[in-house]
Image (cartoon, rainbow, N blue to C red):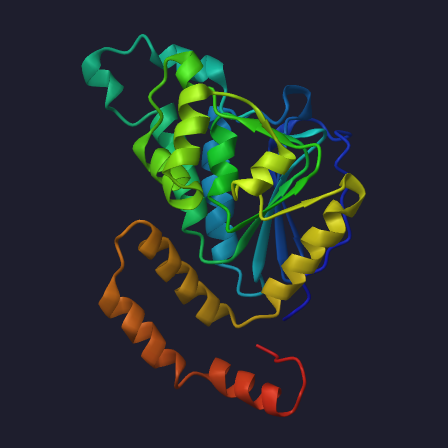
Length: 273
């Protein structure tokens, strides 16, 4: 299956607030954060829903690409500060127990490791923990009115290490320092300049650009992409499993995918994976 296009569900906040929604259309799965009155702020219960959706998507062989977006005028205001505040009363022993904070980290890391290529459709502001949620996606397409900030330093919060590492590996240490230590807000042009955005487009062109990229990804060889995505993430963490990566390379040389890809190239037609 190679169709990555989608007829668009309105993102106007018309639906009642709910946990994240999954919409499947052809080869594309769209996960939509759906609490527009609170700028799609993530609640504790949303994290388990997201993990379940990730499992569901990976189990569906018809799906080739995932788009993550938000309802209304913002992508997401991040994780519910009320839930973080409740944890500040925990004693030292309890602070290390799995809870809301660790659950958010687990969900973001799971998104980064999702087997399918992922696109974050940034339809507006992206704040707090949701900046890391978007950064965990492979591509981020944002409108030119987007803005972002990471307020951890203002809140007295030491951000979880895997999130800081993701900032450093994807944006560089200097940009990570600036965003984490100053907690300053930056706009879409600067988000593009530092590499946070893959592309910046006018609002009216957002869906067209997301569709274009989704269709491109959905048309490529899924097994090869899955393996290369894993290797890229491992390289970024300085944790490459060289034996596993070499095995995937050797296996690809004998795979049905490469046979179809080479034949399609010779016949000057799109491959059918």
